[in-house]
Length: 178
Image (cartoon, rainbow, N blue to C red):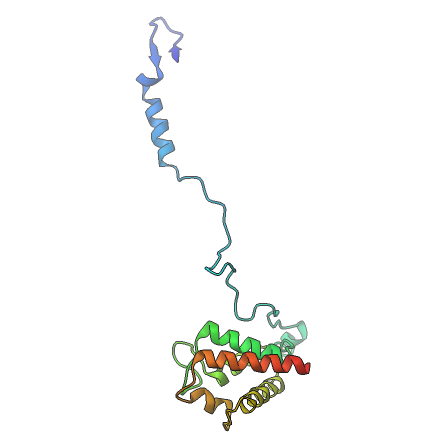
């Protein structure tokens, strides 16, 4: 490309002589690359990571709750739902023996049930009925203990055992329609 200037002295400039091409190339090189389209995170098992309470709405305070300065009403869950939320809470926060919770946020079986309740899912009545189902499964499977907490803290109990117990109790509660 040749540029001719309208003057008495005819100057002829080429793009290469002006340095314009080098400036443009340097400018284009300094720009960030094309943005990748955002993709959802997929875990190795092919699912998107979900919070432990997924599938249930968050407890919301109504206008009346705000006026009365009280907490939101608990989200209604079945006994089976409470037990499933308990095992999901344990998965998300970690399991513990010998204490209800620790500094890292890990919880025991009772601590997980209390946390589910404290987050606004179910009522104390639902949690008591859930514990009854856990006791029923413990006794039906030949593990006579005084409470689920004693079984949780026993030396031979593992986190997998706790999850299996909660799953069996949730299945039992669902079969009973509670």
